[in-house]
Image (cartoon, rainbow, N blue to C red; front, side, top):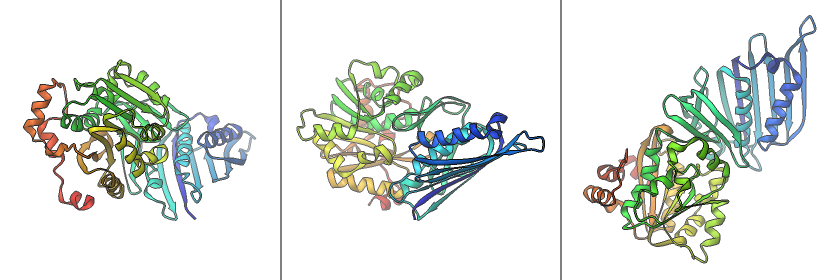
Length: 424
Protein backbone atom coordinates (compact mmCIF):
# COMPACT_ATOMS: atom_id res chain seq x y z
CA UNK A 1 0.00 0.00 0.00
CA UNK A 2 1.50 3.34 -0.99
CA UNK A 3 2.03 5.66 1.95
CA UNK A 4 4.25 8.30 3.53
CA UNK A 5 5.37 8.13 7.17
CA UNK A 6 6.90 11.24 8.81
CA UNK A 7 8.51 10.72 12.21
CA UNK A 8 10.19 13.31 14.45
CA UNK A 9 11.79 13.40 17.89
CA UNK A 10 11.73 16.98 19.17
CA UNK A 11 14.18 18.14 21.83
CA UNK A 12 14.22 21.21 24.12
CA UNK A 13 10.90 22.53 22.89
CA UNK A 14 10.56 26.27 23.41
CA UNK A 15 6.77 26.37 23.42
CA UNK A 16 4.92 27.28 26.61
CA UNK A 17 4.55 24.66 29.32
CA UNK A 18 0.82 24.59 28.62
CA UNK A 19 1.49 23.45 25.05
CA UNK A 20 3.10 20.28 26.40
CA UNK A 21 0.84 19.62 29.40
CA UNK A 22 -2.71 20.67 28.49
CA UNK A 23 -4.67 17.98 26.67
CA UNK A 24 -7.30 20.25 25.14
CA UNK A 25 -4.78 22.73 23.75
CA UNK A 26 -2.66 20.01 22.14
CA UNK A 27 -5.69 18.19 20.76
CA UNK A 28 -7.05 21.42 19.26
CA UNK A 29 -3.68 22.18 17.66
CA UNK A 30 -3.38 18.75 16.03
CA UNK A 31 -6.98 18.47 14.82
CA UNK A 32 -7.04 22.05 13.50
CA UNK A 33 -3.77 21.69 11.59
CA UNK A 34 -4.93 18.41 10.01
CA UNK A 35 -8.16 20.02 8.85
CA UNK A 36 -6.47 23.20 7.55
CA UNK A 37 -4.00 21.12 5.55
CA UNK A 38 -6.85 19.42 3.71
CA UNK A 39 -6.81 16.11 5.59
CA UNK A 40 -10.00 14.60 7.05
CA UNK A 41 -10.18 14.12 10.84
CA UNK A 42 -12.65 11.37 11.76
CA UNK A 43 -12.09 11.57 15.50
CA UNK A 44 -9.44 12.06 18.16
CA UNK A 45 -8.45 10.59 21.50
CA UNK A 46 -6.02 12.45 23.80
CA UNK A 47 -5.15 11.35 27.33
CA UNK A 48 -3.98 13.66 30.12
CA UNK A 49 -1.28 12.25 32.42
CA UNK A 50 -1.00 13.71 35.92
CA UNK A 51 1.81 13.72 38.47
CA UNK A 52 1.55 12.60 42.09
CA UNK A 53 0.08 15.96 43.15
CA UNK A 54 -2.61 15.74 40.49
CA UNK A 55 -1.12 18.49 38.31
CA UNK A 56 -1.22 18.13 34.53
CA UNK A 57 1.83 16.30 33.17
CA UNK A 58 2.41 14.82 29.72
CA UNK A 59 -0.16 14.15 27.02
CA UNK A 60 -0.51 11.33 24.53
CA UNK A 61 -3.00 11.40 21.68
CA UNK A 62 -4.06 10.33 18.23
CA UNK A 63 -6.05 12.04 15.49
CA UNK A 64 -7.72 9.40 13.33
CA UNK A 65 -7.79 10.56 9.70
CA UNK A 66 -9.60 9.24 6.68
CA UNK A 67 -6.09 9.24 5.20
CA UNK A 68 -4.63 7.45 8.32
CA UNK A 69 -3.40 9.15 11.53
CA UNK A 70 -1.37 11.66 13.52
CA UNK A 71 0.08 10.54 16.89
CA UNK A 72 1.87 12.70 19.47
CA UNK A 73 3.36 12.20 22.95
CA UNK A 74 4.90 14.86 25.21
CA UNK A 75 7.51 14.71 27.99
CA UNK A 76 7.22 18.19 29.53
CA UNK A 77 9.80 17.43 32.24
CA UNK A 78 12.42 17.05 29.48
CA UNK A 79 10.89 19.42 26.92
CA UNK A 80 10.57 16.49 24.52
CA UNK A 81 7.91 15.42 22.03
CA UNK A 82 7.54 12.53 19.61
CA UNK A 83 5.44 13.13 16.50
CA UNK A 84 4.22 10.56 13.99
CA UNK A 85 2.21 11.45 10.85
CA UNK A 86 1.20 8.75 8.39
CA UNK A 87 -0.94 9.13 5.26
CA UNK A 88 -2.05 6.59 2.71
CA UNK A 89 -1.32 7.60 -0.90
CA UNK A 90 -3.30 4.90 -2.62
CA UNK A 91 -6.06 7.00 -4.23
CA UNK A 92 -4.14 10.32 -4.31
CA UNK A 93 -0.81 11.70 -3.19
CA UNK A 94 -1.42 13.11 0.31
CA UNK A 95 2.28 13.68 0.96
CA UNK A 96 2.05 17.46 0.54
CA UNK A 97 -0.79 17.66 3.08
CA UNK A 98 1.05 15.45 5.55
CA UNK A 99 4.11 17.68 5.35
CA UNK A 100 2.05 20.80 6.00
CA UNK A 101 0.65 19.27 9.22
CA UNK A 102 4.04 17.93 10.23
CA UNK A 103 5.75 21.30 9.83
CA UNK A 104 2.91 23.24 11.48
CA UNK A 105 2.94 21.11 14.65
CA UNK A 106 6.74 21.23 14.84
CA UNK A 107 6.76 25.01 14.38
CA UNK A 108 4.16 25.42 17.14
CA UNK A 109 6.30 23.42 19.58
CA UNK A 110 9.52 25.30 18.67
CA UNK A 111 12.14 22.56 19.22
CA UNK A 112 15.81 23.49 19.47
CA UNK A 113 16.75 20.19 17.82
CA UNK A 114 14.93 17.74 15.58
CA UNK A 115 15.76 14.19 14.61
CA UNK A 116 13.48 13.37 11.70
CA UNK A 117 12.87 10.35 9.50
CA UNK A 118 10.82 9.67 6.41
CA UNK A 119 9.58 6.22 5.47
CA UNK A 120 8.14 5.83 1.98
CA UNK A 121 5.95 2.75 1.70
CA UNK A 122 5.31 1.28 -1.71
CA UNK A 123 8.10 3.40 -3.24
CA UNK A 124 6.19 6.49 -4.37
CA UNK A 125 7.14 8.40 -7.52
CA UNK A 126 9.56 11.29 -7.34
CA UNK A 127 6.88 13.92 -6.83
CA UNK A 128 5.75 12.32 -3.56
CA UNK A 129 9.28 12.20 -2.20
CA UNK A 130 10.21 15.78 -3.10
CA UNK A 131 10.35 18.41 -0.37
CA UNK A 132 9.99 15.93 2.52
CA UNK A 133 11.91 15.97 5.80
CA UNK A 134 15.40 14.65 6.40
CA UNK A 135 17.24 14.79 9.76
CA UNK A 136 17.86 18.50 10.37
CA UNK A 137 20.90 20.29 11.76
CA UNK A 138 20.56 21.30 15.39
CA UNK A 139 19.60 24.83 16.29
CA UNK A 140 16.73 27.25 15.89
CA UNK A 141 15.74 28.85 12.62
CA UNK A 142 16.93 26.12 10.26
CA UNK A 143 15.11 26.31 6.91
CA UNK A 144 15.34 23.03 5.06
CA UNK A 145 14.36 21.80 1.61
CA UNK A 146 14.68 18.25 0.34
CA UNK A 147 16.04 17.89 -3.21
CA UNK A 148 15.13 14.22 -3.46
CA UNK A 149 14.49 11.42 -1.00
CA UNK A 150 18.19 11.07 -0.17
CA UNK A 151 19.56 14.63 -0.18
CA UNK A 152 18.61 18.10 0.97
CA UNK A 153 19.78 21.63 1.50
CA UNK A 154 19.40 24.11 4.35
CA UNK A 155 20.06 27.68 5.28
CA UNK A 156 19.63 29.38 8.60
CA UNK A 157 16.76 31.80 9.05
CA UNK A 158 17.08 34.85 11.24
CA UNK A 159 13.43 35.79 11.67
CA UNK A 160 10.13 34.39 10.41
CA UNK A 161 8.23 37.46 9.19
CA UNK A 162 5.02 35.90 7.95
CA UNK A 163 3.59 32.43 7.57
CA UNK A 164 0.22 31.02 6.58
CA UNK A 165 -1.77 29.01 4.11
CA UNK A 166 -3.65 30.38 1.10
CA UNK A 167 -6.35 28.46 -0.74
CA UNK A 168 -3.63 26.63 -2.67
CA UNK A 169 -0.38 26.43 -0.73
CA UNK A 170 1.58 27.11 2.42
CA UNK A 171 3.77 30.23 2.37
CA UNK A 172 6.60 31.65 4.49
CA UNK A 173 8.62 34.87 4.40
CA UNK A 174 11.92 34.90 6.28
CA UNK A 175 14.63 37.44 6.99
CA UNK A 176 17.88 35.48 6.61
CA UNK A 177 21.58 36.26 7.16
CA UNK A 178 22.65 34.78 3.80
CA UNK A 179 19.89 35.75 1.36
CA UNK A 180 18.09 38.67 3.00
CA UNK A 181 14.33 38.49 2.54
CA UNK A 182 13.42 34.96 1.43
CA UNK A 183 10.12 33.53 0.16
CA UNK A 184 8.99 29.87 0.28
CA UNK A 185 5.96 27.96 -0.96
CA UNK A 186 5.03 24.51 0.35
CA UNK A 187 8.44 24.19 1.95
CA UNK A 188 10.36 25.01 -1.26
CA UNK A 189 12.64 28.00 -1.77
CA UNK A 190 11.16 30.34 -4.39
CA UNK A 191 13.14 33.57 -4.40
CA UNK A 192 15.21 35.93 -2.26
CA UNK A 193 16.17 39.56 -2.59
CA UNK A 194 19.94 38.94 -2.74
CA UNK A 195 19.83 35.91 -5.02
CA UNK A 196 16.94 36.39 -7.45
CA UNK A 197 19.11 37.73 -10.29
CA UNK A 198 20.67 34.31 -10.93
CA UNK A 199 17.26 32.87 -11.76
CA UNK A 200 15.36 35.79 -13.29
CA UNK A 201 18.10 37.22 -15.51
CA UNK A 202 18.71 33.86 -17.16
CA UNK A 203 15.07 32.80 -17.40
CA UNK A 204 14.21 36.04 -19.20
CA UNK A 205 17.25 37.53 -20.93
CA UNK A 206 18.38 34.33 -22.68
CA UNK A 207 15.30 34.16 -24.96
CA UNK A 208 14.76 37.94 -25.06
CA UNK A 209 18.22 38.72 -26.39
CA UNK A 210 17.79 36.05 -29.07
CA UNK A 211 14.54 37.71 -30.17
CA UNK A 212 14.94 40.77 -32.44
CA UNK A 213 12.29 42.88 -30.68
CA UNK A 214 10.13 41.23 -27.99
CA UNK A 215 6.97 43.29 -27.51
CA UNK A 216 4.36 41.08 -25.79
CA UNK A 217 4.98 38.52 -23.06
CA UNK A 218 2.87 36.16 -20.98
CA UNK A 219 4.12 35.04 -17.56
CA UNK A 220 2.42 32.04 -16.01
CA UNK A 221 3.00 32.18 -12.27
CA UNK A 222 5.62 34.80 -11.51
CA UNK A 223 3.56 36.52 -8.82
CA UNK A 224 6.71 37.74 -7.08
CA UNK A 225 7.22 40.13 -10.03
CA UNK A 226 10.85 39.20 -10.69
CA UNK A 227 10.27 37.97 -14.24
CA UNK A 228 8.19 41.04 -15.11
CA UNK A 229 10.91 43.34 -13.77
CA UNK A 230 13.46 41.59 -15.98
CA UNK A 231 11.21 41.79 -19.06
CA UNK A 232 10.69 45.53 -18.56
CA UNK A 233 14.41 46.05 -19.19
CA UNK A 234 13.73 45.24 -22.85
CA UNK A 235 12.99 48.59 -24.56
CA UNK A 236 10.51 47.09 -27.04
CA UNK A 237 8.18 45.57 -24.40
CA UNK A 238 4.69 47.06 -24.59
CA UNK A 239 2.57 44.45 -22.78
CA UNK A 240 3.13 41.84 -20.09
CA UNK A 241 0.35 39.61 -18.80
CA UNK A 242 0.96 37.85 -15.47
CA UNK A 243 -1.44 34.93 -14.98
CA UNK A 244 -0.96 33.99 -11.32
CA UNK A 245 -3.12 31.35 -9.67
CA UNK A 246 -2.66 32.54 -6.10
CA UNK A 247 -3.42 36.18 -5.33
CA UNK A 248 -1.70 35.72 -1.97
CA UNK A 249 1.66 35.50 -3.75
CA UNK A 250 1.15 38.94 -5.29
CA UNK A 251 -0.01 40.32 -1.95
CA UNK A 252 3.14 39.00 -0.26
CA UNK A 253 5.34 40.36 -3.05
CA UNK A 254 3.87 43.84 -2.68
CA UNK A 255 4.37 43.74 1.08
CA UNK A 256 7.74 42.00 1.42
CA UNK A 257 9.55 41.54 -1.92
CA UNK A 258 10.05 45.06 -3.27
CA UNK A 259 13.72 44.27 -3.86
CA UNK A 260 12.64 41.48 -6.24
CA UNK A 261 9.97 43.19 -8.36
CA UNK A 262 11.20 46.81 -7.98
CA UNK A 263 7.76 48.19 -8.71
CA UNK A 264 7.13 46.07 -11.82
CA UNK A 265 3.77 44.85 -10.51
CA UNK A 266 2.48 48.43 -10.75
CA UNK A 267 3.94 49.29 -14.15
CA UNK A 268 1.18 50.32 -16.61
CA UNK A 269 2.48 47.81 -19.15
CA UNK A 270 1.79 44.95 -16.72
CA UNK A 271 -1.65 43.32 -16.51
CA UNK A 272 -2.35 41.05 -13.53
CA UNK A 273 -4.81 38.21 -14.04
CA UNK A 274 -5.65 36.10 -10.99
CA UNK A 275 -6.71 32.61 -11.98
CA UNK A 276 -5.80 29.27 -13.47
CA UNK A 277 -2.95 29.66 -15.97
CA UNK A 278 -3.79 26.32 -17.56
CA UNK A 279 -7.33 27.48 -18.34
CA UNK A 280 -6.09 30.87 -19.53
CA UNK A 281 -3.80 29.27 -22.12
CA UNK A 282 -6.08 26.46 -23.21
CA UNK A 283 -9.12 28.72 -23.63
CA UNK A 284 -7.20 31.35 -25.60
CA UNK A 285 -5.14 28.91 -27.66
CA UNK A 286 -7.94 27.67 -29.97
CA UNK A 287 -8.83 31.20 -31.05
CA UNK A 288 -5.22 32.40 -30.90
CA UNK A 289 -6.54 35.96 -30.67
CA UNK A 290 -3.64 37.07 -28.49
CA UNK A 291 -0.11 36.27 -29.63
CA UNK A 292 2.99 36.57 -27.48
CA UNK A 293 6.67 36.85 -28.38
CA UNK A 294 7.61 35.11 -25.14
CA UNK A 295 5.71 32.84 -22.76
CA UNK A 296 7.48 32.38 -19.44
CA UNK A 297 6.57 29.44 -17.21
CA UNK A 298 7.74 30.93 -13.90
CA UNK A 299 6.11 28.18 -11.86
CA UNK A 300 6.62 26.02 -8.81
CA UNK A 301 7.92 22.49 -9.38
CA UNK A 302 5.76 20.17 -11.55
CA UNK A 303 3.73 18.77 -8.65
CA UNK A 304 0.39 19.77 -7.14
CA UNK A 305 -1.36 22.77 -8.75
CA UNK A 306 1.47 23.31 -11.27
CA UNK A 307 1.68 19.74 -12.59
CA UNK A 308 -0.73 20.25 -15.51
CA UNK A 309 1.32 23.24 -16.72
CA UNK A 310 4.23 20.95 -17.60
CA UNK A 311 2.22 18.53 -19.75
CA UNK A 312 2.67 18.03 -23.47
CA UNK A 313 -0.89 19.24 -24.12
CA UNK A 314 -0.17 22.45 -22.26
CA UNK A 315 3.05 23.02 -24.18
CA UNK A 316 0.98 22.68 -27.38
CA UNK A 317 -1.43 25.29 -26.04
CA UNK A 318 1.49 27.64 -25.42
CA UNK A 319 2.83 27.03 -28.91
CA UNK A 320 -0.52 28.10 -30.38
CA UNK A 321 -0.27 31.42 -28.52
CA UNK A 322 3.22 32.29 -29.78
CA UNK A 323 3.70 34.94 -32.43
CA UNK A 324 6.01 34.05 -35.34
CA UNK A 325 9.55 33.83 -34.00
CA UNK A 326 8.30 33.45 -30.42
CA UNK A 327 9.55 31.11 -27.71
CA UNK A 328 8.68 29.73 -24.32
CA UNK A 329 11.09 29.77 -21.39
CA UNK A 330 10.95 27.67 -18.23
CA UNK A 331 12.98 26.06 -15.47
CA UNK A 332 13.25 22.28 -15.53
CA UNK A 333 14.88 21.34 -12.21
CA UNK A 334 18.09 19.95 -10.75
CA UNK A 335 19.87 17.44 -13.02
CA UNK A 336 21.88 15.85 -10.20
CA UNK A 337 18.90 15.30 -7.90
CA UNK A 338 15.94 15.14 -10.32
CA UNK A 339 17.30 13.53 -13.50
CA UNK A 340 14.06 11.78 -14.45
CA UNK A 341 12.16 15.06 -14.24
CA UNK A 342 14.58 16.79 -16.60
CA UNK A 343 14.61 13.92 -19.06
CA UNK A 344 10.80 13.83 -19.14
CA UNK A 345 10.29 17.60 -19.53
CA UNK A 346 12.86 17.95 -22.31
CA UNK A 347 11.32 14.98 -24.15
CA UNK A 348 7.85 16.56 -23.91
CA UNK A 349 9.15 19.87 -25.23
CA UNK A 350 10.80 18.10 -28.17
CA UNK A 351 7.47 16.49 -29.07
CA UNK A 352 6.00 19.98 -29.54
CA UNK A 353 8.79 22.36 -30.64
CA UNK A 354 11.40 22.12 -33.37
CA UNK A 355 14.18 23.79 -31.34
CA UNK A 356 14.63 22.95 -27.65
CA UNK A 357 17.70 24.34 -25.86
CA UNK A 358 18.39 23.25 -22.26
CA UNK A 359 20.93 25.34 -20.36
CA UNK A 360 22.32 25.22 -16.84
CA UNK A 361 23.63 27.44 -14.08
CA UNK A 362 24.22 27.28 -10.36
CA UNK A 363 21.48 28.96 -8.31
CA UNK A 364 22.73 29.49 -4.72
CA UNK A 365 19.24 29.66 -3.17
CA UNK A 366 18.39 26.26 -4.67
CA UNK A 367 21.65 24.76 -3.46
CA UNK A 368 22.56 23.06 -6.73
CA UNK A 369 23.04 23.23 -10.49
CA UNK A 370 19.66 24.20 -11.98
CA UNK A 371 18.23 23.57 -15.43
CA UNK A 372 16.36 25.93 -17.74
CA UNK A 373 15.14 25.59 -21.32
CA UNK A 374 13.86 27.61 -24.23
CA UNK A 375 11.61 26.07 -26.85
CA UNK A 376 10.57 27.48 -30.21
CA UNK A 377 9.98 26.54 -33.83
CA UNK A 378 12.43 29.17 -35.10
CA UNK A 379 14.26 30.99 -32.28
CA UNK A 380 17.61 29.48 -31.29
CA UNK A 381 19.47 31.29 -28.46
CA UNK A 382 22.34 28.80 -28.70
CA UNK A 383 23.16 30.10 -32.18
CA UNK A 384 24.25 33.52 -30.84
CA UNK A 385 27.95 34.33 -30.37
CA UNK A 386 29.07 36.11 -27.20
CA UNK A 387 29.97 39.26 -29.12
CA UNK A 388 26.46 39.45 -30.62
CA UNK A 389 24.84 39.05 -27.20
CA UNK A 390 26.96 41.87 -25.77
CA UNK A 391 26.22 44.05 -28.81
CA UNK A 392 22.46 43.58 -28.38
CA UNK A 393 22.66 44.30 -24.64
CA UNK A 394 24.49 47.55 -25.37
CA UNK A 395 22.21 48.50 -28.25
CA UNK A 396 19.12 47.98 -26.07
CA UNK A 397 20.79 49.81 -23.16
CA UNK A 398 20.25 46.93 -20.79
CA UNK A 399 22.60 47.57 -17.91
CA UNK A 400 22.89 46.70 -14.23
CA UNK A 401 22.80 42.94 -14.89
CA UNK A 402 24.56 40.98 -12.16
CA UNK A 403 24.91 37.57 -13.83
CA UNK A 404 24.11 37.57 -17.52
CA UNK A 405 26.47 38.63 -20.34
CA UNK A 406 27.62 37.32 -23.70
CA UNK A 407 30.19 34.86 -22.38
CA UNK A 408 27.76 33.51 -19.78
CA UNK A 409 25.05 33.14 -22.43
CA UNK A 410 27.23 30.87 -24.53
CA UNK A 411 28.76 28.95 -21.64
CA UNK A 412 25.39 27.90 -20.26
CA UNK A 413 24.58 25.96 -23.44
CA UNK A 414 27.87 24.00 -23.31
CA UNK A 415 26.68 20.74 -21.76
CA UNK A 416 29.06 18.34 -20.00
CA UNK A 417 28.93 14.75 -21.17
CA UNK A 418 26.74 13.49 -18.34
CA UNK A 419 24.04 16.03 -19.26
CA UNK A 420 24.33 15.21 -22.95
CA UNK A 421 23.76 11.57 -22.07
CA UNK A 422 20.86 12.43 -19.75
CA UNK A 423 19.00 14.62 -22.26
CA UNK A 424 19.87 12.72 -25.41
